[in-house]
Image (cartoon, rainbow over all chains, first blue to last red; front, top):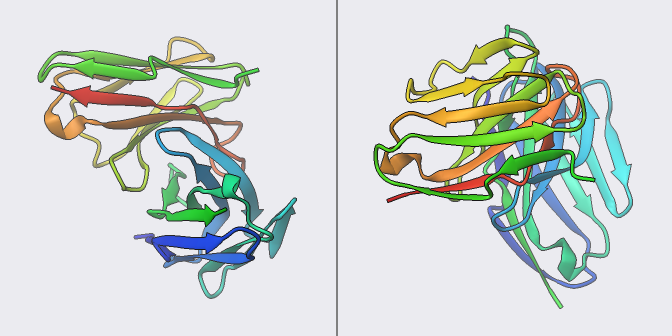
Amino acid sequence: KQEVTQIPAALSVPEGENLVLNCSFTDSAIYNLQWFRQDPGKGLTSLLLIQSSQREQTSGRLNASLDKSSGRSTLYIAASQPGDSATYLCAVSNYGGATNKLIFGTGTLLAVQP
Amino acid sequence: DAMVIQNPRYQVTQFGKPVTLSCSQTLNHNVMYWYQQKSSQAPKLLFHYYDKDFNNEADTPDNFQSRRPNTSFCFLDIRSPGLGDAAMYLCATSRVRSTDTQYFGPGTRLTVL
């Protein structure tokens, strides 16, 4: 059974700092991995999608890497801003079976202090 | 401009009183999903539709039902809400089952009194 873990559960950094969020998963047979952002009381916004054959994806100040063999992904945020404050969720899509679904971690709550 | 729309954004119901949540999409995607997210927990898939093909998760309670009358709309029916069903309900869409990005709506916050 696939399990997704995110560490740390919460993180507070001063504005301008570079930071790394971690995601690990137990079953390496994945189709892809997605990073999402969730603001309080809101839905999820997709940030980056990495297919299982890829090693990383970049969008602006965000860079996500994937090491499928070790079951790890990282989300790197450069030059953090107060507007980056949110919960960041990673989710994997598993290979095989009639139903392929996203399995989420519980997220990292990020606070960027001005 | 909205792509996945959920109504209402906030829903209050009484214990045992049926409630229906609505999701619509302008993306013309084949797949629509319903997730339940309880406070400080990860979203959990309840079921999804691939076109008209309904796929229920094994651990989704019978209390939860879904309808998809056409490509654009999908409904979540909770037949007899209990206090434990209070949660954020998220609707998402994608083009194919597993290889594409899922696009999420803003969610419906359900309160059960």
